[in-house]
Image (cartoon, rainbow, N blue to C red; front, top):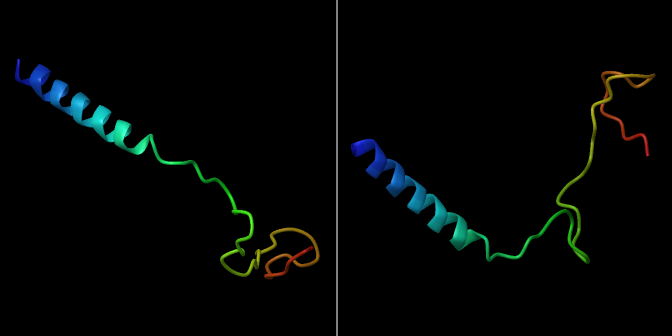
Length: 57
């Protein structure tokens, strides 16, 4: 019986939390007009630059 009550309280709390955060607008990826937060220095693992930080673009 205690487990059912605990599970019910947990489910209610989870649903309230999900409901509170579901109303926020979704922002995915870089936004229009905003700069990229930092430099991009990938570490190459193949090719002539293997083991070095070098942007191939």
